[in-house]
Structures are given as C-alpha cells and as structure tokens.
Image 1: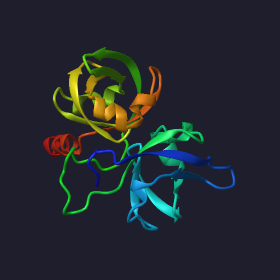
Image 2: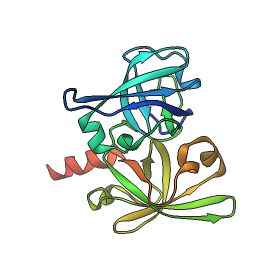
Image 3: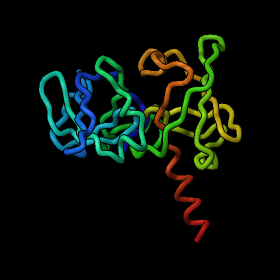
Image 4: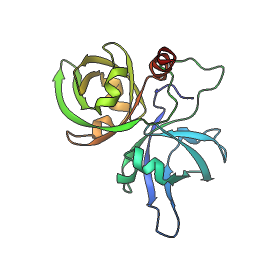
Length: 198
C-alpha cells in the first residue's frame, strides 16, 4: 500500500519492452532516496504502478513489466532519461500523508489543460467515463502516483490545483498537454459501490 506522496523523481536508465519470445519487459531506474532499505522482491510504485524489484545495485533498481502493466499504464512510453515518480510502500509506523493508494492503475488519462493561478497551476485531465463516478470534488485521485485533491469534476474530466512543492518534487513539471498519465481512483469508493450493488 502507498500514500501517493512521491519520495523522489528517478530517471529511466534502461527500457526494454517485451519481445515476442519473452512476454516480460524490463525497466531500470536510477534513484537515490528510494533505494534506501530497498531489497529484492520489494514493491515500489513507479508513476503509481506497483511493481516488484527484481535487480538492485548501489544506484539503480530494475522491475519487470508484464503485458497487463503495459496495457493499463503509460510505462510503455518511457525512454532513457525520462523522469518517473517513485514511492516505497507505506510502513505500519508511517503517517498516512496522502490517501490509500494500491498502486493498481485503473486506466490512463490525458492532460488537457494547464493554466497558472497565483503560484499554483490548475491542470485538467481527461479520464475514461467509467472512472468518473469515483471522482468527486474535494475527493482524492492518484495521477502518476501523486495523491491529488479534485478541484472540479465534469462528465469526462477533472481539474486539480498543483502547488509549487508538488511541481518541484514530481514529474508533473515535465508533463505537457496531451501527455498520458496513470490514474487510480479511490479504492474506498469502489468498495462502497460493490457493497451497494449486492
């Protein structure tokens, strides 16, 4: 489990997509803070997708990319040098600073607008209509693994207000209108819906 509070922006070192003979790709990421205490087999959120560490050294870790992961996320578009948001799993003694994030990306969305508002930036995202019932004003949504509060919700899009700290410490400062983003909606809303349907 994660909180959506990005610990570090890592940099893609190697991106090997799956070949026809091997249905698993490999992603190597250069990092510093996220490596502290990291071990083989640990989970780590990369742009909000929970992945398993399969190789590790003093400056880099590697994860495997299953075809399902590539279908559901924007990780397949990564190239060497690109930044990625990194978060290690929540420890039982940690503060829950963002919201409960599983690292199970629901779908990809797209940045559709960006405009300054004082020191902040109001950014709009298009989302699949099937996710919109779970997105509410002043509720939580994870965008590329970042816990954000929804400012406005429309039928197929929503906006958030990005404070300077978020822009300075995540990959959103490198993103542009048209770029794909990973979206994970609030798991609590999905459970409530499932219970009500019974």
